[in-house]
Image (tube, rainbow, N blue to C red; front, side, top):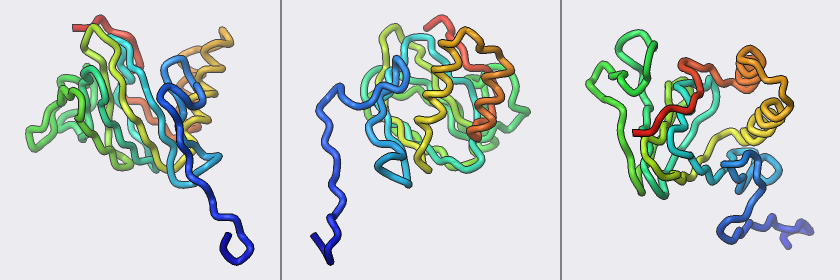
Length: 175
């Protein structure tokens, strides 16, 4: 105790624990504990493509723990259309295939995406600031499981949460 106030305690979580916010996403720390950021363990199934998008305010970090992911974190030199995996930045940067230990930082306003090209599920640590991204993930899960999800309703939900989609979220054949 300091000056009559109880100091905030940290959080210790054993492997595999946390709040499941989607079938493939486990919240480790969110807005209920931090105003600054939320952290998730994400399991990315083969063929999953989050689609290229950007955020006006949020910054994100992705760290690959297991498997491989194709990673994008740059502004394309040409118009942002078609398959983002073929995009190239004006300095020649292209999409990166990252395995365990690969790191991606995404500043606000930067187009980014990830895709699992492999045949096994990839695992990554995903962090976003400011905190609260778990609210979007829960609302998206609720919408998808309600049977009322449409491309328009998903697009509206994304915009409400500062997600500006450039290419569609989709499942592609891996490989």
